[in-house]
Length: 265
Image (tube, rainbow, N blue to C red):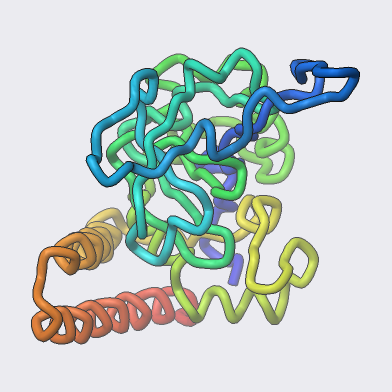
């Protein structure tokens, strides 16, 4: 499977979102007892019935259970800057505000995001190295640490140039493929648990090198699937059924294309 491929970590930063609860050192002492300043759900808040954005919640985001194959179930309001100084595990904002990234759910597949969604640590984020280079974020301590480790794993030094050879939507089709997930379950037991595939597995996973024109064909199918999912919420129940059949057919086509690539050699 590794023939004619590069590890995913040579193409993209792979890590998890913010640890949004308050840091232990920032806890409040009340009547001699420690109390958290805030929890995950103070930072990531579901919209109210009035759907009015609360003050200080400047960003949108998702948790692990919000992410599914090619779609997100719900969007939350996020007060990242407000709580960041007290968080247990903040992340560099560039990881979320990059023009494109992948979001991988807890036990599901992933979603191609172009709207700058923030995530908590139950979501894995996949950000192209060239995008981080363009915004000058490669020297940030946490990102630089992942960069060095990824260079050790891959044996490749020039990541931005490598990442520009791959369409992120093509990579999403690989990650979401049932064929690929069956392969990982059968061959890469360490780093997986109850349907979960952890970052260390994805970092080493071989991404097949194919011409960008072929990647584009797959990328456009991915875009179509995500657009179809977005339209479902606005359709009647009868129409929903026909749209679901259409989505299934598109995903089956993606499955065929990815399996063909990975079984060719």
